[in-house]
Length: 223
Image (spheres, rainbow, N blue to C red):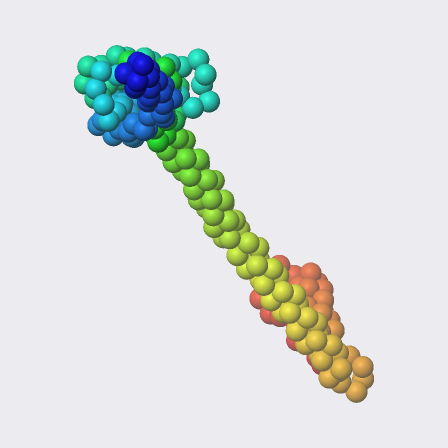
C-alpha cells in the first residue's frame, strides 16, 4: 500500500513538473542583420534569428504588418531569413520568436531591428533638382544685376545732357545780363552801341546803292 502511494506521488510530481516546464516562458532570441541594417535598393540582406536551444521553429514578423510572416524549422540554434532584390517597401522594423518541440507557445519577441533601404537614384534626382533650382536662381540674379548695370550709362547720359542744358541756360542768362549792361551804359543822347552799329550799317548800304558803278570808296559814318 505504501509502495503504491509513493508511486502515485512520484507520478504526480513528474506530471506537474512537465506541465510547469511547458508553461514556462522561453527566453527571447536575438536578431541580427548581415551585411548591414542600412542597404541599397535592389541588393540583398539576411536577418539571422538565434535561440538558446536547438531543434526549434523560428518565426520572423514585421511591425505594423500583420500579414507578413516567415516561419522556419532549424536543427541548429539559429535560422536565416534571406531578402533578395530589396525594394523600398521592404524597409521597416522586424522581430523574431521561436518555440521548441516540447512547448506550445512562442517565446518572447526579440529586440526590434530597423531595416533601412536607400535608393541612390532617388537621392541623385533630389540633388539634381536642388542644383537646378540653385542655378536658376543664380541666373535670374545675374540677369537682374546686368540689367541694372546696363541702365546706368543711360542714366549717366541723361545726367550729362541735363548738365549741358543747365550750362547752356546759364550762358544764355549771362548773355542776357551782358545785353542789359550794354543798354545801361548807353551815351547821354540815349543811343546805345548796338543802335550805332545798326545805323552805321544802314547808311553804308544806302551810300553804296547811290554811287556809280566802279566806285570803290565807302561812305564815312559820322557819330
